[in-house]
Length: 276
Image 1 (cartoon, one colour):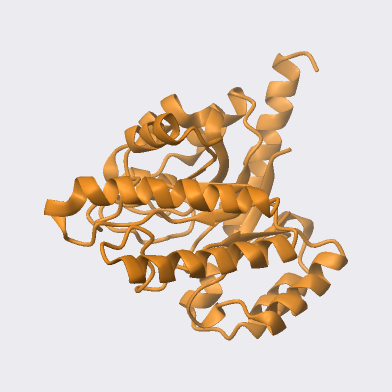
Image 2: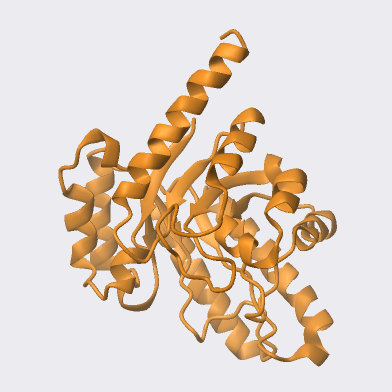
């Protein structure tokens, strides 16, 4: 089933305290602006601890659905060239996966590692990155959690920018690859069509935010150059059952209402053409 949700990223960007997460989830909204699920970002001043996990558990117990976004604090790098720092990063991610398991999260979104300017070590660090992803994938599976790997923006020294890197990871590791497709990131690299053409069957989640093709701006839908109608239509035509999650820096609810309208229209259209 296709779902349309909201990430708590906007609360982090607006420097709201973690208590705002519960307030926003419980806020009564019109159906058009009511998320089907919430992506809770476990990072920065919203890092999850026992108290915060317990408060979220209460929301889950009354029917709210969550996904968890991995921590992305500057020190975290699962492909760090220094082994002790790399282990510390992986331990932090595993703790976040544990939180996802406690919260019965629908999925866990993972950022890959980066080479952080060490171009001479890029090939070796790429292997380390793939090994770390495979290890975290297995760990998440052992906790009953779907791990979904996000494509990253170019020119920030991250791995997993191009579709070919995902295909290579799948071939070498043999993992059941699930992808968080971020068209905003792909737009900056010119890879939107490539992801849709080569990895659509692996897409579990789509991060929805816009930009004008130069910076990772996390704008509301329609303020940038991403062709969202095309993306929605192509994935609907391929019968991809994905979670669309708004990751804007500002209030996302008007964009959410537009997305829900588009998805509803597409569902009716393809149901009619398939004779269902």
